[in-house]
Length: 79
Image (cartoon, one colour):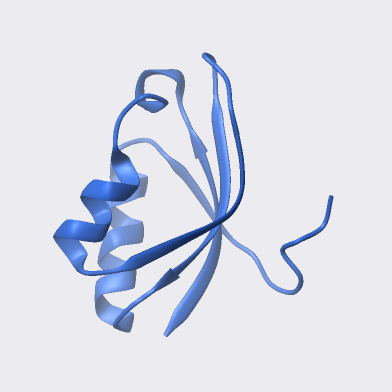
């Protein structure tokens, strides 16, 4: 299963290996479609692929760390 999401990272997590950790811990595969990172904020649009229950756990973990997670639909390649 795939889920498309937009992540917004707070400043204190911008330099942390969050996606790597989620991928290893929950056996999900992130596919980054677009990203913008500054010292103040990180925004990322990506697809997460894996088992539905593990995807949900990974998203809950992201949110518990203070990362905003928004589900997106439709085309994700817009400029």
